Image (tube, rainbow, N blue to C red; front, side, top):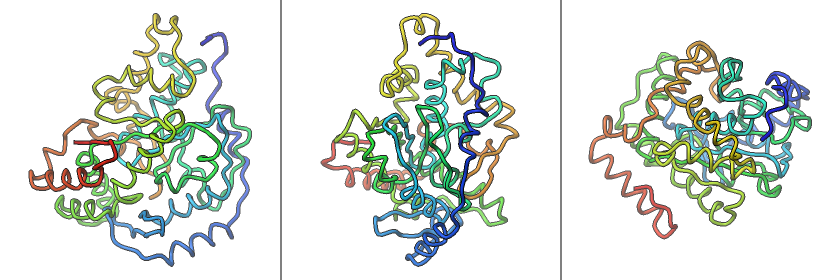
Length: 344
């Protein structure tokens, strides 16, 4: 890639997204629809609603996803990051953004956007950042490639995402580590709201019953796995544990998948390693924007520090009993049997 262009301030890119109309009637229509659905208490302290497509979530992102389905028009050049919550989303967003925008924002630049904005502000979620608060933004002026994010299952993506031929990058994580990360995050929110912490045993029950944000873990993963098998050129399926073992190889894989492979010159200059260093847990967690900044979420504005805990593999062994681990493994084996997918 050429490095002759001048850096483009991220704020200039985002201003195009501020051309927003409001449609409270549309939001109210879907809010009423969601409110009429059966509900249950889930892994967080919010109500979870069961949609006829078989997924659970809190009201705000469900409404946002429905509005996005009606209003969003995908382009073939779009790239969508999709994950189950607490599966390494922040890291994947960082790596993708830094890779796609490496010409405008070199990883070693002192004014890189990551020093002023968290990854969740650089790549925003359809369902609770872009389509929220009655807003219907005009996204047409955003430059290609447009980067978006979502936690919703594959069946609940905006319909034009599936028909446009745009790229989807999905990241999954060991279900036991996903659960433990969700549990820690949920208890931070409960403490904020003055509620008693949720026991790990209760968290295991909710998780095994499928009462997790965006629905059962296994359905979520399988939806994107099957889409990857059907269209590997459009859906990249990544595993958190494999990324941890060799992040540089996965940065190259990301770049190749989105049509922006690293040149021989970039390889010689160490661009890949610079991106890995920039986006590492150790570096990102020490940034002032992580320590003191905030990002919009489905549950309101959250400190960026909440999205950085440990990022390690097999942390579940420090929190779950061997029996709970075997129970989740048994469900995983049964759910994934015959699919070609193995997480154990």
